[in-house]
Image (cartoon, rainbow, N blue to C red; front, side):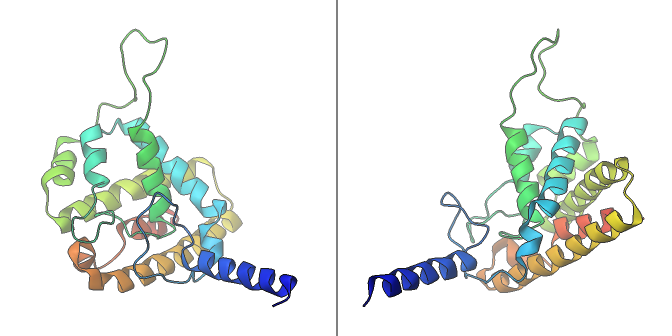
Length: 210
C-alpha cells in the first residue's frame, strides 16, 4: 500500500474512533455502548460554559457541603457510571465538572474565619432528600437545584430574546442527546434502569424559559 494511502486510512480510522467516543477522556470509564454524537454543536463551549459556571457559582453561593457533593457524584455499582447523571450527556457533563471543581476547592485566604465557600449550606430538608432519599426523590431535588442555579446565572446576564432563543435551542438539542444515551444505557440496569428522564437536562431546559 502506498504510504500516503496508508496514512489516510489510519487517519480516517482515528477520526471515526474519536467520533464514537466524543466526550470521554482516558480517565473516564469506557463508553458502553459507543454511540455516535448526534450533534457535536451541543458539546461546544457555547453550552458547556453557562452550565459549568452557573452550577459552580450556585454551589459556592449556597455553600453545599462536601457530603452532598460526594453523594451526587456517587458511582453506580452496577453500571460503573455516575449514579445521578447520564454519562456523556452534554448537559450532565458540565454539571459533573462543576461538582468536581467545587469538591477540590481550596480554603479562602485572608479571612478571619477559615472557610472555603460562602453559603451556610442547603436547607435541612433538601439536604436530607439528597443524602437519604430514594432515587426518584433525589433526582427531583437535583433537578430543582440545577434549574435554580442556571436560572439565576442566566437571568443575571439579562439575555436578549435572541440570546434566550439560542440558549433554549442548545438546551433542547442537548436534552435530545442526553435522552438518546439514557435510552441506550437503560439495558445496563442500575440507576439508569430507574431513570425516566435526565434531571440535569430538564433543569437546563426549564431554566431558560420565563
